[in-house]
Every structure is written in C-alpha cells, then in structure tokens.
Image (cartoon, rainbow, N blue to C red; front, side):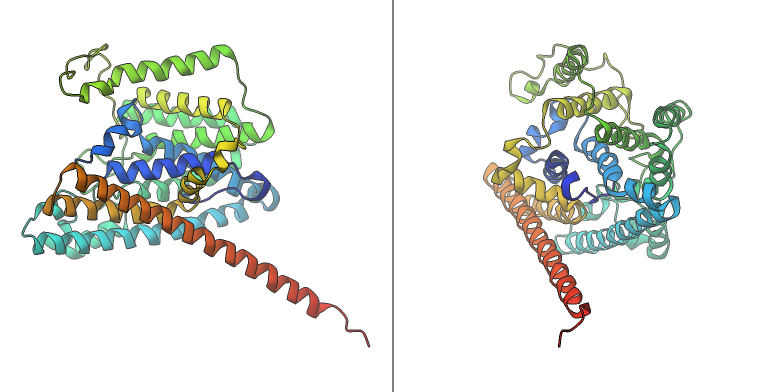
Length: 390
C-alpha cells in the first residue's frame, strides 16, 4: 500500500505509478490556496478528488507489494514487512509536522500574520507545546493538509495485514465486512478524535478503509485474470462519471455562467469527505473501473518522457508527498506576501512541479545506483566464494 509501496519487476503496473503521481501533483496544486491551476484538477470535474485516487491505488499497490510475503512466508512475515513501512511513514509524518510547524510559526512571526500558523492548525504547538507534541505523536493533533499520512499509518497498522491475509481466501466476505464497517461508520458517526476538528478525523479510517479494500480486491482479481469488462458495466461507469461532471458543473467557474447548472446544487445533499459519502465512493470506483478496463498496463503513452516523469513521482510517493506539502505551504506564503497575480501563480506552480519532478528523477537514479551496487557486490561475493584454481 503503502504510500510508496509498489510492485516490482514483471509485476510493475505503469498505470499505478502514473495515476498516483498525477494525484500527487493535483494534491500539491490544490493545497496552494487561491491557485488558478486548482480549477483544472479532478475535484472540479466530479465528486471525488486526488485523495480518493491515492487511497484506492494504495490498496492496489499494497496487494502487489506485500501479498506474496503473506503467501510464501506466512502472516507474521508479511505483517512484519507492512509494519516496517508503517515505521517509515510514521517517522516521515512526524518530521513533516515538525518542519511545517516551525516554518509556519517563523513565517507568522516574520510577517506579523498569525493566520499562517492558525489556518493550518500548528498554532497549538506555541500555545501548549508539550500537549500538542504528545497529541501529534499519538496522531490526535493533525494540522490541516497534514492529515492523510495518519490515515495510512492507522490502516496499515491495523487493517491492511488483515486484508492481505484474508482477501485471497475469502475475497467477497472481506469486501462485505469492509462495506459493513463503512456503513456503520456513516450510520453511527464513528470516528477518531482530532485536536483540530470537533467532528473527528478529516480522513475517517472507519470509512476510508473501504477504498483500501476495494483497491486490494481489484489487484487480487487482476492478478488472477483480467478485470471483467462488459458493455453494460462500461456504460454504467461512464454514465456515472458524466453525471458527476454535470452535477459539479465546472463551467460555473467562468464569469457569467455561475448560475448555469443542469442539476441543482442541493439536490444530492451533503457529500461528506470524512465519511466517504456514497456519491464520492461511486465516482472513484467508476473512474478506477474505466481506467483498469480501457487502459493497458503497457500502453505506449505510459513510456513517453512526460508520463515517465509523472510515474516517477508516483513511484516515490512518500517523499514526493512530503516535499509537495512543504512546497505548497511555501507557495501560499509567497503568493500572500509578494503577489497573487496570474504570473506569480504560474511561476509558483511551475517551480513547484519542477522541483517535484527533479526530486523524483534524483530518487529514481539513486534507486538505480543502489540496485547496480547490489548486483556488483553479489557478483564479487560469488567470485570470492568460488574455489581458486592452482
């Protein structure tokens, strides 16, 4: 799953890296307040947004990355690998919280604007530092825009090992159990406590675990055979995506078309993000089904330079997500203090995306160098272990 866990070798699915990388770029763009490019990200064209894409793909890649360990070495060995990743994500999350808290507190003091710290929720570290630190360590203190990694940590720690163990044995029972927990969370309003949000976690683990499970189930089915495709299913998925587009009505952002809606705004009721409302869930499932059935894992366009650049971001998702969060908050301060005009916004987006792409490329080169070094060391070890001839 992992934020960053991927399949390897022959199993690698280029679609997963690409769409996860695209979601990361959307998250960076969406997290820069008043960003003009945010009008062109996924959330403007349907009910779901980049977070749903990311979590769905997390379940898919979790199955590919860890499930063989559960099969070949047993539950304990598989869970151990997952827990190793949990440790990495937890350390990165705490480091990200510390960096953002320090940076925004300094910006608030330097520019004499306390809203930099208060809007994100890191002001609590200045008010009650000991309590806020303890709550951050226990994932109760979740500053705004820093609340998705806690979801991964909790789900990987408690839910993902269970899913990967049971799914190959009882796939549909696993799905029904996961759906039941999602229903219970929505009906009973089950959630975990949050220091910043009175209603609980923005990404409620009791609800969002369903997306992880659906992603893992899709990977399980696709590993056995191609995901079933039919004209009826494709028509239903495409029809729902079109319906979501009409309901969101992105053209209303154009001056003079604000009231030009096909479907009234209030007709569908609330679409809770915390509880993963049925409208949002159905939208991301429909998009995922269309992508899995209409796009080949080895489509030629996935090997183009621009697609490889996006895919590298998805391959190193943990690092790119953390860096993108820091860059989006930096861009927010720059635009607020310097200039928030169109040219400045384009410049912030261009520099930010360029840094993310460059970092992903550097990380890929490092991984390649490490892999090459391991091969050389193995060859030397094999050579030294051979008996010497006289």
